[in-house]
Image 1 (cartoon, helix red, strand yellow):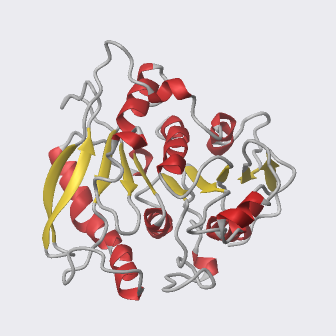
Image 2 (image 1 turned 120 degrees about the horizontal axis):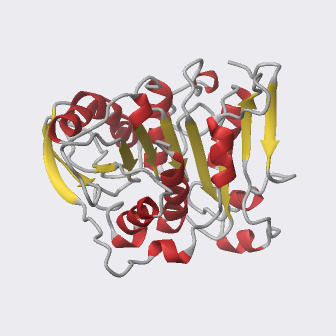
Image 3 (image 1 turned 60 degrees about the vertical axis):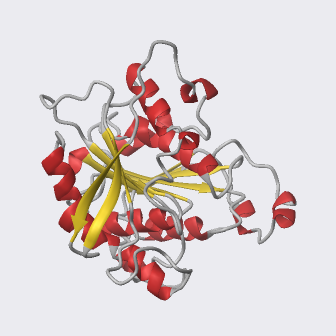
Length: 324
């Protein structure tokens, strides 16, 4: 779907600040020019009701490159919840599968909570996002206490899904397709498990998904494949191969990487300018979404790399944008 004639482009930077992402080595990256703190771009449908703005435009105003240091620190007298590990049976993988779940501090069965699914990258597992260095519990709890985020359930699953192989064995087509297969596990078994065992507010307006690296590829794939289930979609340092021309195995044609008429409330694409692993690949996804007329927020980070240092600021922005 092409952008409608009445689309507008909002840009908080006069140039794309992504040139450093194309560097093939740290030495090359150092030669790139220093850019502004953060770059954002979104295509948004014009609003016909005067001064009213879209939800995505409101979220754009919240965007920062990096979170304040104090939001990542434990506060005296505050109870911070811990991730709990559960096991569910995956009919797709035909085995018991682990998942980490973080409940709000004052979780109650008398209240319904929205759910955010956060997907790990290649070779990793459900514990990667649950590490203290990612700061999910501290950051989210502090944001909720400050009134800057909604209480939510955070789900960190194991996304390698192959009934013949229990874990990733290499970067090849078979293993990548096993990650792509997670969409079936998510819809058939994981989401029903979460909804049956926790007090969940259902519906796309209460369901979000994001991921890092391979998980970022999968969150985009799942978001555009199931737009009626996920109202908020994020991706950080997304791995290549989702569309033809961005590596193999490719899953979609370029014109299929779109939400069509069922747009999400939020699409946040984050990327590290000095990413020596996926390079400029997120920029390719950005341009495809733009060409297909999808509204999104672009978050470019000049101080981070292909690791938790990019995930934390992405989640800081996402926590403050979803379910509002």
